[in-house]
Image (cartoon, rainbow, N blue to C red; front, side):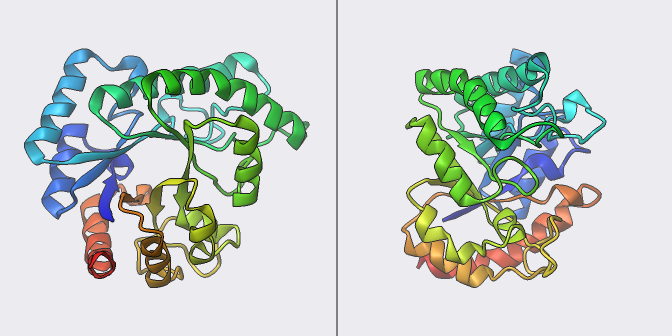
Length: 283
């Protein structure tokens, strides 16, 4: 198991500066945000991709994932990254999400990322039934899965509180319908905890689907607010033990976007807390 840090905590810094800072703290991996100001695919020039890759090489960081979930570039006033959603009632609006995902798949292939992550459908509209929303999500996602297959680039769905797919059984039902080898699970341990699914209890069941993990802590209230590991109520020792027992040897990406005022300190505290645990289970 290897520790990475998500660039989405560094929205006040360029992607090159973010890479430098994350490497200097001791991480060996970085999740690249496919969004402003780091790597918004719709506006990314070839020279910017070259600069990003050069910074990765210089600081010896590996890309753990491309985060195509957040879409701050669109600046939707309802919520800065859930929208545009896959299931928005307006087909023209949700097409922005679909095409962004296609571009993110291409970006991931270009920079050597192992996969991308996306939102689990998005928030339901007031007049929308769950059955209707799942039908729309299916129809919008299928063209992306065709491209993912062409690029041999996995597309990971990340269950999230308050969105269409919150819980693991909902995920399993939907991916069974998709029936695509390109789909995988981004297991966010904090999100699981928020919806009452303590992560250590679900790791083994979801292991056949899990391709990547997000790590953050959550308060005992289970309110969806990302905290530095060790600052909340999640049992990291039990969770990491469960992950290690599945022989997972991939990336554990720490995601602490609420700490953009001092991301270095958050990244450093997370590293100091998690590194001894991870190293212990890697022995």
